[in-house]
Length: 483
Ligand code: SF4
Ligand code: FE
Image 1 (cartoon, rainbow, N blue to C red):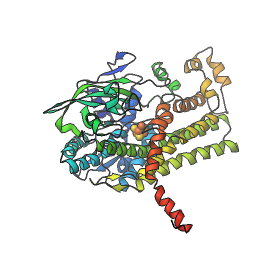
Image 2 (image 1 turned 180 degrees about the vertical axis):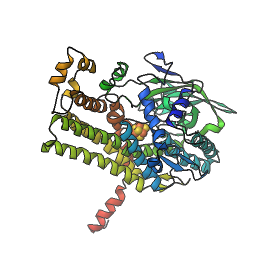
Image 3 (image 1 turned 135 degrees about the vertical axis):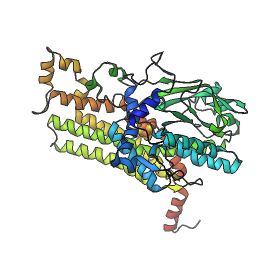
Image 4 (image 1 turned 90 degrees about the vertical axis):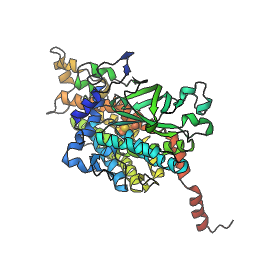
């Protein structure tokens, strides 16, 4: 089957009978819901761009197994060049949507499960790699979007899964049958799950032998019986219901997160990728997290490009574009943003093959990448707010601007430089507001902190990968220390 067009993608999602709740009600029309639709449009962009000849090299790849052209979001990375192109593709998608386009979690889960299932089979003689490859070909051939579900609710963070007061705080196998398993639990903060056709579930932490039932990975379609979602709120989300694209700032695109409940969901044997081999739970977590920490060196940089551009436009409209401190702030924002990109490219260029043959990023550099992302977008945001000015958070609504009586006053008193309409000035401020405080702030600012693991998770990996012993030896040798 050929790559799907954006329109075909939307239709394919419409056909899936998903169970989605928001504001205490089951959503009947997910596709046209004003709060949810922008997030669907963002994923659609990963299909639209793949149709454009100028982006073919970034957005698609040729499957070495089938020789068919597939969307890069369903690809298994076969070289460092593939890893670099992945980051560039994500920067492009961030630039086009200024939000989270969601499809990366499945790509990162794909590459993590590929190598981990292979190694599990080598050790235990299981058939997980074959299961996964069958699923992978199905996804590639139908050009599907896959969610990667890792984060369990976790309950008491000081306790492992099997010691939790409520055993469902981590997703687990509750029944083993000859034809498959039944799972119960939930995954929280699931990016883009309701815009996906399938979900790959993975464990969320390293596990010991007593956590056998929790060391499970599998894939199910989004209409699986017993699976339902509860949409998470975003700051200013109900503004999208006010029929003012101007007040929303970025009316076309957005992201979405949901709590996904697996209320005794059946998984057939050929959809299982890990089932009780506890020592591979941590391996899978580290690899998925590593890939997703690399991903942020692309997507957040693309969104950062839009924010820097918006701040520069606001400066033009305010007539301050020549002020040296404004120029310097834009330089600083660019420096920070490109530093993040350097990290994304570096961990890709330094990647290496796994036993299964696909390429893994350099783990130390990927964790450094994400650690920087927990900081720099906050500084970029601070500088954007500085340049934008207070009007970003005090400007009246579009309705006031359009009102025959009030409108002329809004027009007159919020005007900046001659030749730029008040409307355009307010539009660029609304876009900045959306990125730093509104619905897109979930995907840009706060997700930079917690997405792909909170800062401490990266520091643990940096400590593990930093090779301090080697560095001590370097120092001792030069100091002529003999112990
Ligand atoms: Fe992709 Fe970035 Fe969204 Fe993760 S946060 S799914 S890497 S766009
Ligand atoms: Fe994310």
